[in-house]
Image (tube, rainbow, N blue to C red; front, side, top):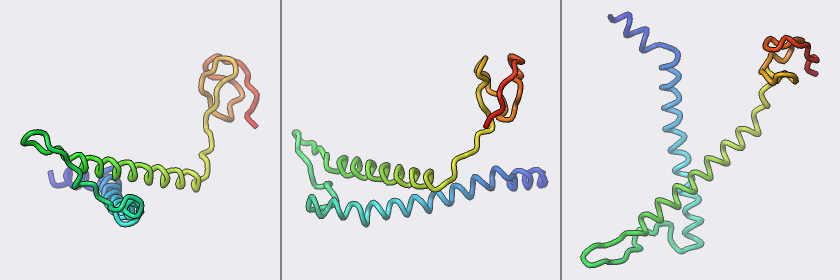
Length: 129
C-alpha cells in the first residue's frame, strides 16, 4: 500500500500539476499586484480614487453598495485585459508549431505531412513543400 501511494504521489502528472498550481498562485499574486498597485492607481489619478466602495444608495432600510460591485467589475476587467496581453506576448515570443498533419486534397481527411498517398481514399497526393 505504501508503494502504491509513493507511485501515485510521484507520478509525473501529479508533480507537474503541483508545480503548475504553485506557479499559478505566484503568477496571480504578480498580476494582482500589477492591477492594484499600478493600474488602479492610474484609475485613481483619473477618477480621484481607486476604490468605489463608498458609492451606495438607500432603499428603505436597505443599502445597495453598487460601488463595491463596480470596483470588483473594473478589477476583473483589468485583470482579464492584462492576462490577455501576457498571453498574446507569449504567443508572439514562441516559434510557431510545425504542422505534422495536412488535409488530403481529394477526401479532406487528415494525413501525415510527408505522405505521398492518402490512407483514407488511397489516392496519390503531392508531397508537401
